[in-house]
Image (cartoon, rainbow, N blue to C red; front, side, top):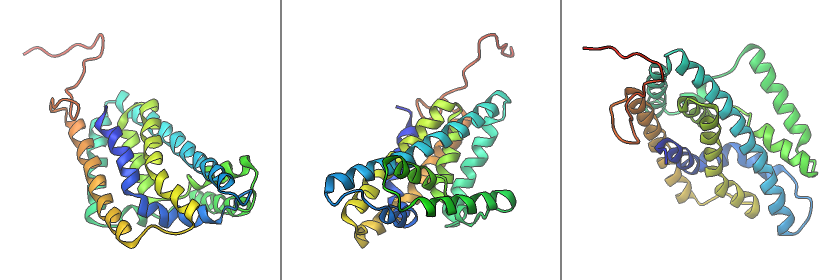
Length: 234
């Protein structure tokens, strides 16, 4: 298995403490269509399916962007720069969170939050799914990191798979939160907060190593000559 794909899932799991802080209030605000645990579990799965679907779509878009970079011969340089940015975000905590959209993007995010607020109290399955999908579009530093990783995958399919695995990694904590109605323990949250920067660093190092094409099996494979490409003779 591609080590970056494995890192995507573990990154989501290790970032659960962050996800609970960002998405937890929304998860708890969505009403259950019934009083039983089955109804609550079903709405929880639908809610998170919407969020993970949005992540997969974003991953496909960023993967397509990575494909364009690869065809333009720029993916190596951009992957190294992106990996360096992720490492910098670990050294300077909250760096990705400090990015604040302006102009049209800021207006669009404001409308997104308004649509999310209006939809929160609806309990129909399609409404709960839509709430989850909107939730996946909200600005989040951890999602930015995953999107950078998806772009480094170089294809739409792998980009979508990368962010889908990232989303699946966040599921246990968010499902547990919604089903129990309480936050995870303080010690567990502290452990997850310590693990998250380690995983972001691992993802950054993998991105840089893969771009350098050092010939390390699975981690940094050598460049593959495209059919018809002429290599220089020495």
